Image (cartoon, rainbow, N blue to C red; front, side, top):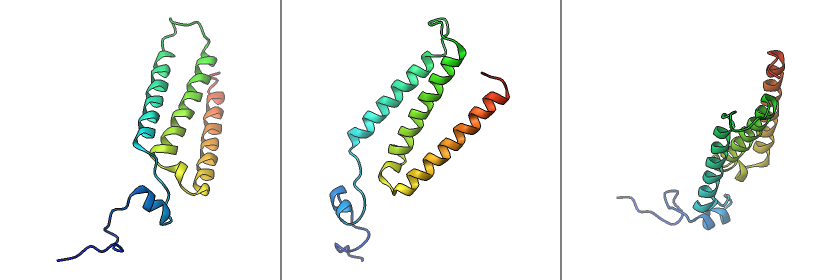
Length: 116
């Protein structure tokens, strides 16, 4: 029968103990709930933009709004639910570089297909 000692890796630590042991502190559950509420509100507003009869905005304005909301939602999911905000800064820089590259390719494709 195995015994669990305080130094064994099977011992559960509180977030404070984990942070003091060299790890990073995890956010509270309430922060995840707030982020989920923001994501739900952004999604509701994205769905609202599909109803062109409600507003008379042009296609370009709607596309710009949708891209901005997409980037906000993507940032929130990656930063909080994938814990990128709490990891090493090099991961954050790699993510931002990839995001800028993906958006540049997306804008080039919109222009190449004359969607604007």
